[in-house]
Amino acid sequence: MKAGLAELRTLARGLHPALLAESGLKAALVTLANRVPIITTVRADSDGRYPEQVEVTAYYIVAEALANAAKHSGASAIDVRIEESGGRLRIEIADDGVGGADLTRGSGLIGLQDRASAIGGSLAVDCPAGAGTVIRAELPCE
Image 1 (cartoon, one colour):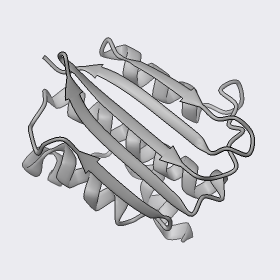
Image 2 (image 1 turned 180 degrees about the horizontal axis):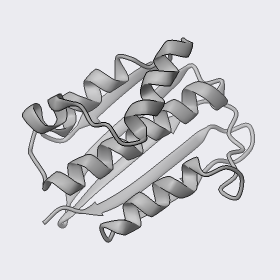
Image 3 (image 1 turned 180 degrees about the vertical axis):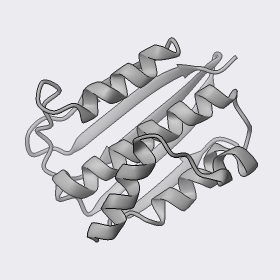
Image 4 (image 1 turned 30 degrees about the horizontal axis):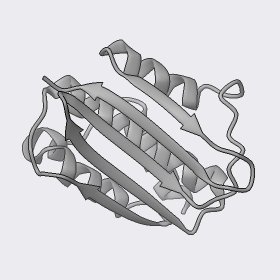
């Protein structure tokens, strides 16, 4: 489990796999989800391609969210959903863990917000104590 978390953290911090460039976001996220020590489901509206910076940003957001969930949430399941609507790529990562994440502690969640805003997107975190965590990002994809 520690090796898997270390790999997720490395990916989240800047190295993106060739699979992302070659096969697109959905394939890269499915591969990433298979490395998480928690049952993780990836659902995407399509196998479509998006601008490179959108795919890379989305990948990093999901990678960091999965690493955080694996390390801190105590979750038994994680659900990743990707959909495109109105020129926006919507990403949701939800776990059934303990919740209680704090945006003011640590740099992980703040880093995710920074990544999203750097390309004109947004990121929100909903994590009431005892009720799991939901991270939602919207990125421009046109």
